[in-house]
Amino acid sequence: MLLGLIALAQLGKIVIFLVTLSVLVVLHEYGHFIVARRNGVRVNEFAVGMGPKFFGWVSPRSGTLYSFRALPIGGYCAMEGEDGKTSEAEQQREFRETGSGGSVNFQSKSPWRRLGIVVAGPIANFILAYVILLFGVFAFGIPSNVPQAVVGPINAGSPANKVGLQTGDRVVAVNGVAIADGSQLVGTIHASLGKHLTLTYVREGVQNIVKVTPAACPSPDKPGTGCIGFYPVVAYERVGFVAAFAASGVEYVNTVTQELENLKLIATKFSTYAGQITGPIGIGQAAITVQDLGWGPYLQLAALISFALGIFNLLPLPALDGGRGAFIVAELIRGKPVDPEKEAFVHIAGLAALLLLMLVVAYHDIARIVAGHGAFN
Image (cartoon, helix red, strand yellow):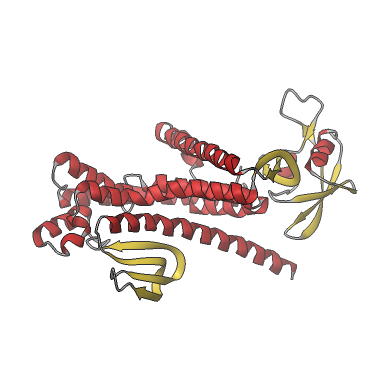
């Protein structure tokens, strides 16, 4: 019964993550949809989900099929002139030869308009990242300096890590003495260097007891202070209307800076930082873990995922918006579309590189989980 409740709770977290990911993908596709319609391109279908059609509705005004698919994960925006099977250059050549679809065909638009439609998806993710942060601040406030008695990120190899504490565990007592708040918990641990402590904590509604001995804190300015190697989760506090916009703006700038710095490190020192690239499996693990910290931290992670999704889609790789955009940019520079045969060769090579990267990242994520490393190690 107990194991069943824990499994159900974990399943609920997985569902929340999948719903979050689907919303980010659908709104990405909606970015394509809006700009395509603004430029007179016919959208044959706007789908929520993947797989067989569950049900749908055809707009009598635009002729667009709005559908819900059987698998509620992701979605897509199918435009006239984009069959998803042949290359961008091949479709452009076909349109120039046949004129199929007329002025509502994606391929009938100027390179600049087509490029705008292609990059609209990633831009939607960038905008959505800020909207998520703003909503999070309005709904839950901003992080304060007040710690809670909740275990946050845990250092690998620390006493907390060795005795099995996990992110999200709520400590309710130390040596039988009830813990009222995070400050009391931190103070007790700091004052117990080398002393055995019995921690009572709650995980998934179940109370557990573990014994741990604080080691010397790594910080040199805290001699004689004990630490067990985790950062307590801080409480969130409400702020005013103006402060909410300012705080979400600062957080957005921090998110952008962090992602661009990570991209720079990977590009310039790939061999050093390649092992730190996280794929869908690792992101899912992190999302499930962060849910234990509350909705405030989870929305911050959702905003980070949205921004990262936009960056990823701008990479000049096949099947991504960046790959399509790269050939349109080449068309702008050359004054004519890239030769379809040459584009096909680039697509095959790029697709092989993308699949290899996905396999390496998936292997890294799985190996890290099997080795017992948490989402923040």
